[in-house]
Image (cartoon, rainbow, N blue to C red; front, side, top):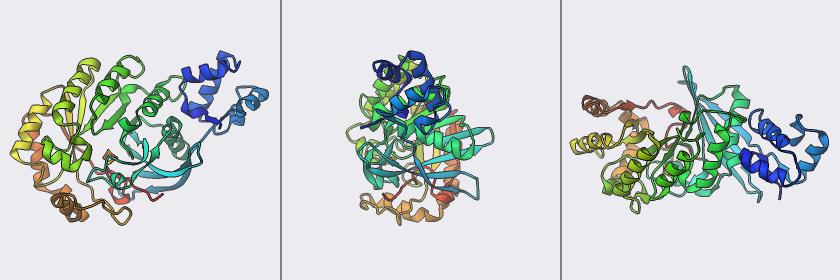
Length: 370
Ligand code: SF4
């Protein structure tokens, strides 16, 4: 089985190649060709002699993604990319990535898994179930393919596409090391955000891992919070039961103390469900726990003609999902009042725009049929 050159950090590649008698500087040239110049075939690595290309081709390959479609929002020019990828066992899966351009800010939202088995009630990906984890090469290739197609170099990368990054932890960590390597894309770690629903010991481990690597130390963490009430949060996010908010908050404090990096809380606004005075008060208190900002996200209609809902587990949530088909919730006065009330308490709060909503590319809308 040939190994994908895109799946290794520079250090790993050195170890693998040098043990096969390739000189160190050659392994650096290979890494640079693969990750900075985005070589798609070993024969395209012209920095190394043809014999070496041939030798390396016996054990390695470059496993790019096949871009199936690109959809562009007529409204805000957000682009959604549907990729097909085949793993070492020849298992084909489809994944989606999104490019959002907002003046100088060019953000690529990438997937870490094909599908997801967390099963959040509001998320189309969660209704797909998990197909498989993506390799580190498949994670970084999403960015390389988008650069190739659009000639846009991202200023920011967010791990907020399909899948739960901490359930594919090692490959996500490897991809972070590749992205930030100066011989590769060389993006600063402060321009990268990893989003999670939160798992016991994983946030702490992430804090330790990024702290111990100077190239990663500024990676930002976003928690998909959505409710400060354990009971309601469990209805939204099935894994929250085993990872209650007390545990998660302790881990966030540890993350901040270890890294010094602010936390972002992602909070989907479900009118009448998580917008009471108590919700506001708990959010205000939480915002003072460690330096943080809160992103309030309008709920986005999930296209269940693509993915069947698992169940109407919680009828209230399910009704909201159906009611919001015209996305009237995002225009609701209550949403704006909620944001203003938090601001008046000096909470750093942003009302997130719904980029790509009209092409099902907004938060929670990514889903494909495999
Ligand atoms: S929100 Fe994230 S963790 Fe939850 S189902 Fe969707 S992809 Fe998975």
